[in-house]
Image (cartoon, rainbow, N blue to C red; front, side):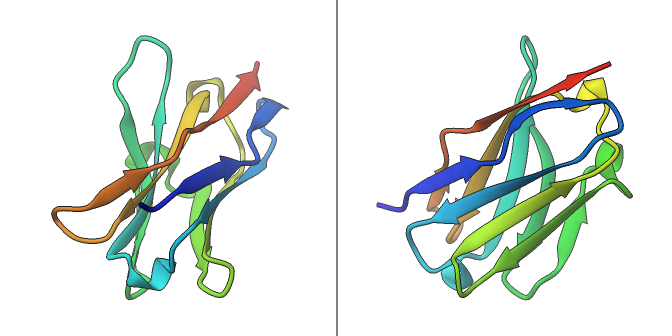
Length: 116
């Protein structure tokens, strides 16, 4: 079983920055995709960003130009740098590791709160 542990969440003022980390118990270079998702109260979980095995990245339209996903294969860790945070960015942020079409794993999430 693969375990993911998110960290780095917290309370920040609008316009501020946070960097989330996702530490994975397996080699992330064996994962097809590493991604970040978020869920606000009363809303469905939504895609934020992902990075593929070959290093390609994709961001949701709502975070383009503000969030950057990256990874450190040596540390088996994926990061989400979040700049110019807005109140709408608040929620629980989850990390997801996708090994293949049958196997994916989720972390427990880390809370991000943005005050206006």
